[in-house]
Image (cartoon, rainbow, N blue to C red):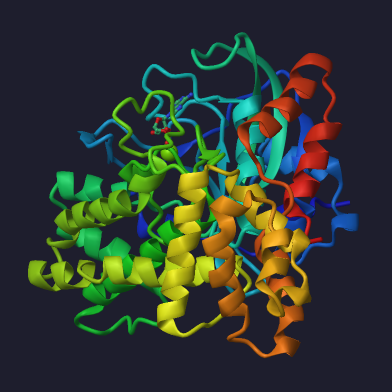
Length: 470
Ligand code: AMP
Ligand code: MG
């Protein structure tokens, strides 16, 4: 039987751009290959039937690396915590291949933990098993929450012992395969700016526009500004999605910003326990640069820094004019997403603003659990809330003195809708607010079962729970 992963419709979009953007690399050999996670939910988009794909197919393709194309370590630089770093690049992963999905879109398979490359410097090119487990979980939870995110296709434990300062060591090793729109980063362009290569910037931009921005006329003279305009919109929307989801990415360096506007690369991320703008996910982020509340501002700053490379092919004032729209896009998207989390699609503008504003204020002042507040709303919502404010006050699980004003506003908003809309409010509340939140203690407890007893059941249960729609 042939391996279905090896006969997918691979394309050579990035490879065809030539060797200025990457180096050819090979994968490391590992002592062991144990498939720990396979994302059957992604197979459909690849036109594969999970029943027809064996665990060994995953291992052969994504562990032993029987690829069909050369592997490309992509070249990039980036601003890390505000400092320019010209020594980045794919140091522990590579572009395994690009595949046309059944939806007509082009997708990347990117590895993480697959061995050393010319960009590894002194590091080992490896991914810890815990790091892999955490990225799988983040991507599935974010996807469920409606965030535009990469996913993980597979996680294979590879039998090495790794030493890390931030995990009890020795710790176990893994190789993950990421499924995403693109591994081209803001930092990919920053590197080309560093080397003053306007032609290479234009060529890569034309590629990005053709593949990821199909609405832009590839012949238009102002296509690079059009591209930037849409990127500003996508990134503002993504920042709003993280904020509404209560997610703190943790390391928003420009090498972790996708040119397709997709969320990816989950290291020390965390979901916020309570609404706290200062909440910081990465232990090494002592200045709180990438704290929860800074995410929109940092995204805007990263977009601003991307203007430096783009200025080699576009007019500065035009780029600046597009970036000026960021805040408007961000607030509109955040407002809309929060409204949906509260069960609404549309309300008169002033009411919408009041409801979202009061909700955020309630979450901040009461410091109730962020995710549990919304999940509780979804669970307790009753169509009778529309008929009396007392029912709302009795229904929400908060002390009356804290929640009364909010309940009155919520009650008024419900009365903006006809009675028969209440079932849809309930459906939206459930759709937008999953019961299980991927809080740190939840991840840690799934990990402890793996670390102490090699028991993978809690991890698989957690994947199922964060995906669940009930
Ligand atoms: P990250 O913090 O994962 O976004 O990675 C930042 C940079 O460090 C990238 O260039 C990575 O390829 C590189 N890097 C991180 N961890 C390792 C590792 N264990 N081995 C080699 N390179 C690494
Ligand atoms: Mg990265």
